[in-house]
Image (tube, rainbow, N blue to C red; front, side, top):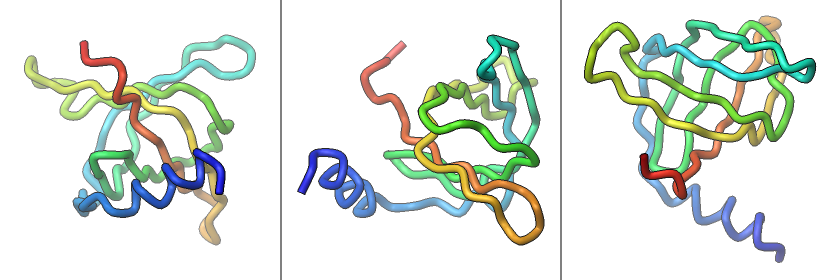
Length: 105
């Protein structure tokens, strides 16, 4: 089994918190280098990652910054990488992010 498969199995052991579609702000750079920003729904959150609901696809391995409660001066930013992007029946995309646990800033 590869290291990424081991990590995938390990991540499933983390407790997942249902975010009840709480709105979060996300930012990333598209494949042309354009800065993109959206307010989207966060479906769930765990120590290993997040599941988001977005109206457009975000390519795999794209680095995304997620900002919880952006208008709050004590808002929290997390950085992750797109692990999956699955088109849903409703035309939206389920975005799976794996969190960057090495950046403790």
